[in-house]
Image 1 (cartoon, each protein chain N blue to C red):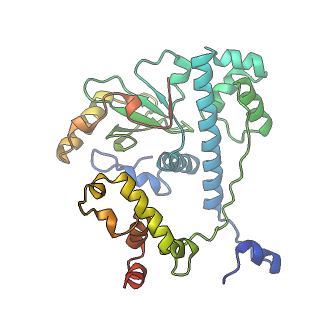
Image 2 (image 1 turned 120 degrees about the vertical axis):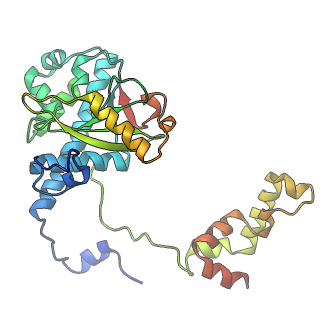
Image 3 (image 1 turned 180 degrees about the vertical axis):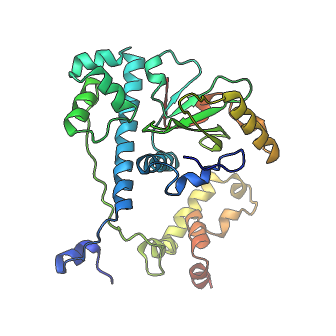
Length: 171
Length: 144
């Protein structure tokens, strides 16, 4: 079994990958775009709900009215945390920085020995699914043969994703 | 931004370095990425009553006859870059032309609209596919 990146980190130092200049400008632009879109959205809200203008926000926050215009239009470079906080608070919102973990989480296609697949192939689970399909499928109650009788919906979905494995289990 | 493709500017060229200023190029990419990932957008409708908000929205519904025609604005607006297009169904935006406001040269919305309509006809796209209102065109958006 492969160890996760966190476990690897405890064992040995991972060689750091240096960001290229392109990558630096890309990540800075993405974050700036995120901040600006949120601030613009908040400004739309205060315009609609409180009927406030940039002048009102300037009075509340103490930031120059022209500067607010430049910030919202994306002309102001390198916004400070203080400016973002003041402007956001003036617009009746509370800013929060969310750091999403971008490390790989080990997501993968289901394998033959996965728990979900082994559960789906269990007779008791199949029975429950069949009973449920019987309860909700009127064709079964009237004696007609239904597609659901071939197996539970979950098993069918897995069969779609893993045709070879399902073939092995049904044989 | 001096790259022309005949009389029509080619949108895909904007992704290449050297056409736009680097900061604006990255901001264009970030905004389009936000559209693809389902991020929040601000939309200025035809009936916008807040002039201060009208100038800073990401998407603006243009006042034209016929199906909804929009422009996408990019920040920072140094070059006043606009992409024009139409929504097809919900959250599907077809961008058909690009425009740039320069000193002494303004953008002609009717000609951009005509170009978009011609594109739809050339591709056998039905104009009936465009939603009736801008609110139906895009989800996760704030309208004013």
